[in-house]
View 1 (tube, rainbow, N blue to C red):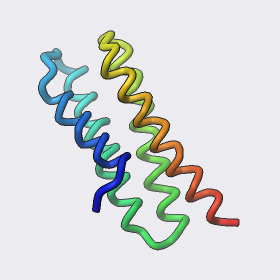
View 2 (view 1 turned 180 degrees about the horizontal axis):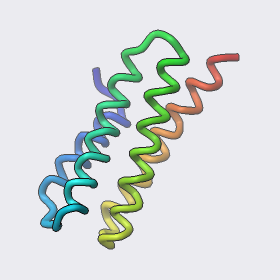
View 3 (view 1 turned 90 degrees about the vertical axis):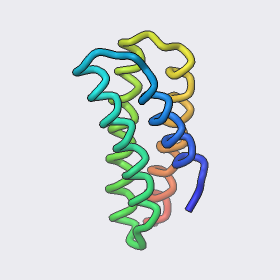
View 4 (view 1 turned 135 degrees about the vertical axis):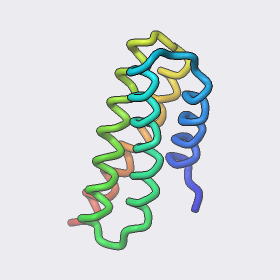
Length: 101
């Protein structure tokens, strides 16, 4: 399985692994970034719209958490890329909501 949100989430997780940050910021950023990729993946594998919505919503929350941490560490390039990921994940939450009607 491959699509833009997942591909970008994986890339950003790998880039965050390379950052030299102190804990607990490093740990929290890696956990939030990993959560995005895993929940996007799990949501895409669900057949029920209710389940998809739940996993994509969790991914959206983790995206917001990662965006905040990136702002805290003042990394402008990653901030821009996480904003792009946020737009993609938000789009997934909207698609699953619209499909319910």
